[in-house]
Length: 93
Image (cartoon, rainbow, N blue to C red; front, side):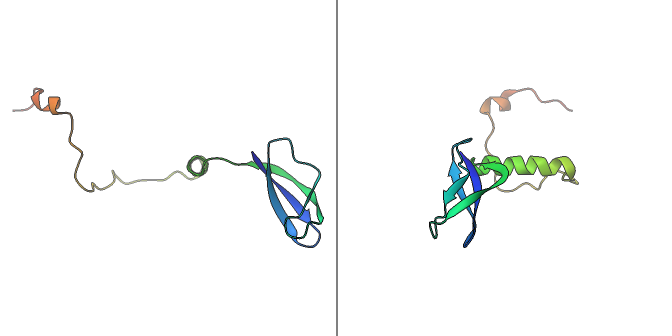
């Protein structure tokens, strides 16, 4: 699904969601039912909010990567590890 922008002469811009490629040149304004002409913009594709935020963060990091000074502080109790790790030999003195 894609979001398309239309312009009503009385009410201004409004958006409609249509399948990609099925937007008509004009649609009725949802407020006043007057015909609104399509404003030619790149369609905004609807998607999962989490996925869209992740894509935006990835795009921002390409131009302004986050710089850290070290690992984040430890919070809370660590989840228990695999109990078989306790039987492994330890190096050291």
